[in-house]
Image (cartoon, rainbow, N blue to C red; front, side, top):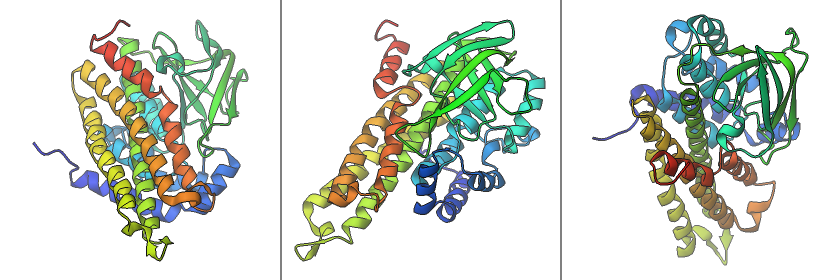
Length: 369
């Protein structure tokens, strides 16, 4: 059976890419890299008008009621544009966690505000994703203390969804109107300056626990899998953009009286990038599509394999596209490094390829946990 995008999904893709083509240019990317906030209020406002924050939120709660495949299409478009906007954590992982683990009252409280773009949640997975850094948290009643590093989508966040080691999820308020003076979110530099991570420090902070969770670890893994798929799709979009930039440059650059695109070696380099990226789209789309299925093993394995495979392909594409540009590929003038760093960021966040492959092997019983 042929698998592809339906008319509504193509419309989502075309509308978003058209908006990003106008809203995100090299000057905007450089400006956000210089500010290092990871959040552009003007861009976020435009994405809210398109309904992006409510993409996966049910219609009766103010969202679009779409699914993981549509989210993957959006992530690919954002990666292609190198857009500085919270998405994987704020628009996919956090809503999914509340849908899976929140009570009806919590869903009514949080999801409409998230769909409007008013409640923006960063996500801290801590040790669940195999990330390096601090992940030392302790819960006493309704108060949470400790530290966790690597908060995703921390730019512009007014809340953080924190996962404990046992899979339990807590929402921490960061805004000035809350009583949580013991919650401190400290941005820290990351390889991708347009998407900084952050460290969260908590001292006896009142938290809201998602209180309708059956199997907390199962819910946490589903949310983690969704985030990994979004990063894989983001890498796919960024890699496609680097390929396009390499092909465009090859048709402009003249060497020894000929455009370099006429040389067989350059043709081979571009063809190899295209051949490596094309099957990745099927992998990401199917991995997103299967998340609505009933098989937890298949869901997790596909998410892990998509994340790990795109990490490797993305690294190869970044290297080859830079080589096509020659020395110019390393200059800020070309701006190629923004996509290079974006792919490198996606590779490590929420677990590197080695971690993801190890988890996939353990899930299928090929190695001990």
